[in-house]
Length: 313
Image 1 (tube, rainbow, N blue to C red):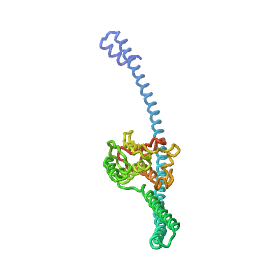
Image 2: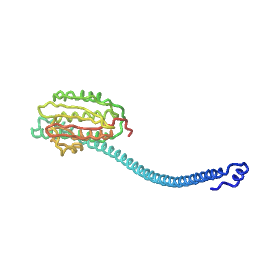
Image 3: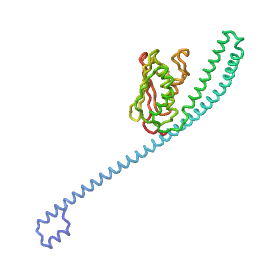
Image 4: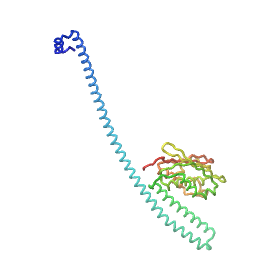
């Protein structure tokens, strides 16, 4: 870069040494180089800005597309949830109507069977009395099954939730089952348990059914030993109820949680066949899971999870 003529004239008028001209030429040359470097950087930054802007525009478009898809999915999910709520309400109403309509004829059968047995007892032979007893007992069992269906249908219905101290809950359950525990000479070993957020009556029913199950399926002439423990697994408490009972075959580990599925004859062990299915539904209502590990002849361990924190359903 040449030194501007005006600068040369000033240097000549001021009697500056001639070598200053060369220095000024170098100075202006460096300025020109810096200018070119700056222009190059500005050009690159402009290109980068365009690339970045295009990328951001594309990202925004992609996000808008994803948001649209997500909104569509959420709307579909809400529609499914609304449909499920409506179906559940219909099923509950159906269960109530069926239970009411079936209980009426059962009450009639029970009343007439009881009337015959009490008023015509002397006129009836032994075989007829046995038949009447069969009718009476079967009607009672049927009535209990109908009530169980109605109770099962109501488990999923939202109920008030609160923080529940499982230690106090187990104390109440053990106290209420004290007669059965005493008759079986059972020992209940309870470790310190946590507080969970849930419906107190449903959680009570959960622990009660599992304890009743452990007492019912104990070994003959061997006092039941039952352990109730828990440990924390991430965002869930893992509860375990272990017994030394008769155990369950592996092929039945899932079947036992299906409503009205029985593994034993009614004459061997009484029950409605709904207890464990009730437990499963209660645990699922509280956002948990339940399963069993068992070996025939060595006892069973029922596992179930409950959230450690408040769950807003």
